[in-house]
Amino acid sequence: MIRRLTEDDRELLMALLQKEPALNLFIIGDVENFGFEQDFMALWGEIDPSDGRIKAVLLRFYRSYLPYADGPFDVEGFATIMRQDNDIHMISGVTEVVKAFDGVINFKQEKQLYFAELKEMNAKIKQDSSSVDNINKATIQDVEAICSLTDTIEEFESSRDGSRTSLRKTLATGTGRTYYVKREDQVITTASTSAENSMSAMIVGVATHQAFREQGLASSVVAQLCIDLLSEGKSLCLFYDNPHAGVIYKRLGFQDIGSWSIMYM
Figure: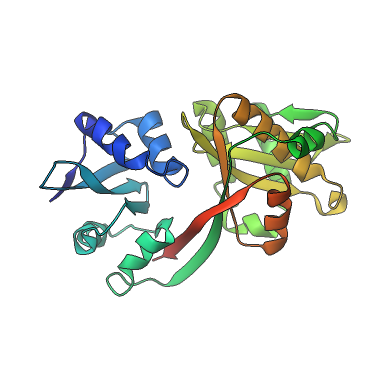
């Protein structure tokens, strides 16, 4: 049976999500930060009739859907919910779960990413964080300067229109943090977290100005984020699809823990 979840289901939902907290950081973060009663967000759960546990969950966050299950689940039931949304933009999640919708929902484009996690401090992180002076923690007043850098980065082209609004909201709500380095009053490198929750956070928005690359600046800023989050008892996660980027992150101690798929409608 699939039904809409409410605050009364929090404990059962967390029991499912905490089996793989890193892979579920988006759902955990949204529940912790926004609860169950929001216009922009909804959660459905498949209930196991034998013991009442939640065996699968579907999150809607604005125009995006994220399913998760720890075993076989009612694919058609979740697909029916998504088909009723005429404004759906994409479905994302652990590849083995998202792939269950192949042939059930029509997708226009697919993107696959590696999912990596860092759990422990190491000497490389400490070394990289201390190799660059004047790493600054961003406030809302820094949003324009940071986005002026990311506007120039090809990888961020698809999110350029909403980048300022998104960053302001993240900083204002405390669901993420951003660090940056300036040279001559210009932001030249930056890295952020998003979807922060009580257990983990996602590293996003890593960017360096073309003229300042290959100097270890991005690694230093990411290392500073790692120090902050690890000292708070949280793990860090990130996506990458570029083998070169994967090498950089693995030097800092990140390890691949799964594959993540994004299906665009």
